[in-house]
Amino acid sequence: MKRFLLISGVVVALVVAGAEVATAAPGGVYDVKDYGAKGNGSTNDSGAIDKAITAANAAGGGTVRFTSGNYKSADTVHLKSNVTIQLDAGATIMGSSADSYDKPEPNPWDDYQDYGHSHFHNAMFSGDKLTNIGFTGAGTIDGGGNLITGNPKAGEADKILSLTRCDGLTLSGIKLRRGGHFAALINGCTNVVSDKLTIDTASDRDGWNIISTTNVKITDVTIAANDDALVFKSDYALGAKLPNGNVTVTNAKLSAVCCNALMFGSETCGDFTGYRFSDITITGAHKSGIGIVSMDGAKISDVHYRDITMSGTYSPIMMKIGTRKRCGNNPGVGSISGITFDNITGTHTGSDFSPTIWGADSTHRVSDVTFTGVRLNVPGGNGTMATGVPSNDPTDYNPKSIGTRPSYGWYVHYASGVRFVGSSVEFAKDDGRPASIVNNSSDITFDHFTAEKGTKSPFDIGFQTVTGYCVQDSATTSGSALRLNTSGSTSHC
View 1 (cartoon, helix red, strand yellow):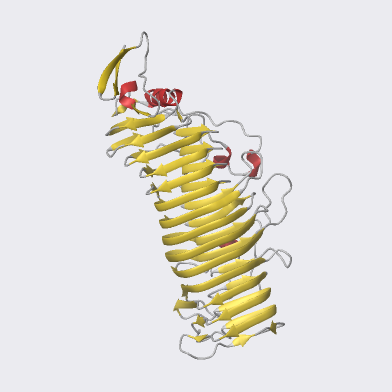
View 2 (cartoon, rainbow, N blue to C red):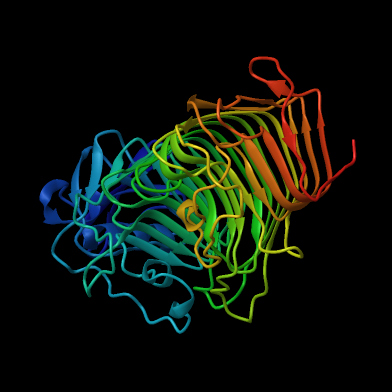
């Protein structure tokens, strides 16, 4: 079998007796068509792709290239270290309905998270304990409507990309479409870089789940999902509580048809710290636009949001400490602290899910949260109602797990050290509820806060059993003084 290499401008013919694949120098480019791929949309090219990856890995690393064409992939492609998948413009890798993908592997810890999070082999591309891998270029990987959004049977895949315990991952330039349950799921990874990635799973489920992962830099990402768009989680699928953090996300466009756009959780076993989100546009989320929940014992801290615009969300901002405790090693109750929001605007529609801060109890409060220049416009339209604490399911993270809030704007329950500075809340339709209610909390400040006054609302801001509240230099949108109700509360102004 004759192959050719270009070395220092000289074409060298290599005769490899009995060989079925090409060879190349370390760091070389491996065109999948040289390994038998047809790119005609009908031939199963998975075997050829695997051969090219194996050759690149054996040579010490290289780039596996897909030139323009439609590459059908009916079997799971097995990624290897030091190999980059390059998709040229016009190149598409298409999923298959042949039900010949790898079976899901057994997992002794699958009771601690949903099925899709517990199994990794049943994917179009999978890999474990790999280093220095990537997907780059300008092409597309498309499940083609063949990937499963629920629990797959043997041979069915439910994700495009599945990676565990990787070190050094690049996802840049390419597009992932119709990913089934997940377009991309990574768990236990570190040193992840993504630039100009596009994900379109608006007809399927999740966009990108980043689980138990550290050292992540994401820029210029666009994700349109049906379920969660860009979500940070930490589960027990790898048999341990793993750390998360040192993450930056800049210049993102996110939407989620049914669920959450930018989210922590719900799987929250390991702790999260050191997150920076900026220059983000959210254009729809029928749960939370920005969601932070600790359901399984995680401590979530040092998280910062800046320059974010939201529209079409059912709950613009939702923070909750729950007590589901679905994690190994007997987790306790988690925490949420050290959170800042700067220059955030949001409109939401279609629900009674007022922006909410909800701690678990008097000893597990959401703490040290500052909103600066956070301007929210909510639907309104409700009449007057009782101002008691709404119902709550402590094992459910969804905004609907808490009953209709008795305030049209912020509802704060079991919190401490919360500050609203230069912020506002208004409604689209007149509302009979107060603008904000704070319950069983301490050290709560409204400074230069503006609220729209409902014509039938009994007061504008209510403090119920709050130790140390302060309202200063604040007013209604019409300029009148805010009406306060301070039952069982003390001021610290």
